[in-house]
Amino acid sequence: MDYINTEQYRVKGKLKIADVATLEDFGRSDKKLKKDLKKIRRDLGEFQDTLYAHNKYSVLICLQGMDTAGKDSLIREVFKDFNVRGVQVHSFKVPTELELDHNYLWRHYLALPAKGKFGVFNRTHYENVLVTRVHPEYILSERIPGIHEVEDIDEKFWEKRFEQINNFERHLHENGTIIFKFFLNLSKEEQRQRLLRRLSIREKHWKFSPGDLKERKLWNKYRYCYEEAINNTTKEHAPWYTIPADNKKAARVIVAKILLERLKKYKDIKEQVLEDEIMANLDAYENQLRSEKED
Image 1: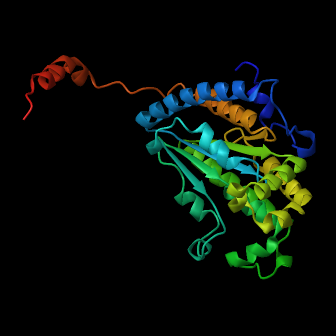
Image 2: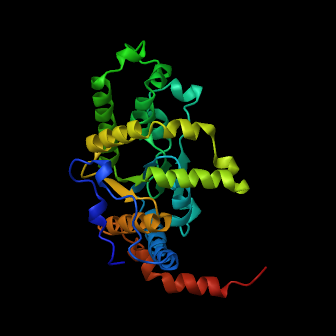
Image 3: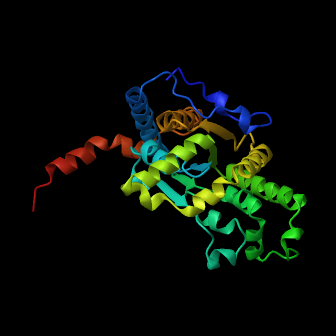
């Protein structure tokens, strides 16, 4: 897929979301985009088998975006050819009472992928500097010392939280986790159309919540918080990518190609070779099995 320059989606300077495209189709039909994705995800599936056997690295994929940005369908389509034992998906909802009894990163630590596996966070630890920043009253339920009312939550609080998230991700990276962070950049008009489809199609009614409309009114505030979060946490070892999300099929191809290209750069992740003693006796093992008689 030479028509995709993956580096153009990587956040390198100061991001301003209004200046970034929300729509891309590369002039290709839906049929061609589906075919392209099928090829890339097959290669990703093969890489996952190798990663699993190598068993020294894990891969963490973080997906963020406004409601209806296409996170669920992207996960379903991009990772379709993975062995189920090698990929785990976690969707983080409103914190439970147990989770609120711990620090805000605790539940994310618990969900991290083991070595040899892919982990996909559908909404992530960044909700703690997005939703809670738009609705700072939510922070009060975390029972943080020194935070007694919303007025106690100032800019220094958020700067400290960005620092904590950066430290969290640096720790993961230094211990063998390969980190990808994708912001699915959806236009406000496309979100409106997708919400309308949820209302007009009976099978999609379950996806709709009146709360979606309340949050939609806070669009500009969310966009500001996304910019702040991304600009403060995009790092060489944990980069952010902004993905045009108005065309779901194109977005899936872009994400899949970014994953494959970057993972292929890890030349030390390769199929494991059997020990010399085992290799030298392969013929004997085969003969032993072939000579066995059925009970």
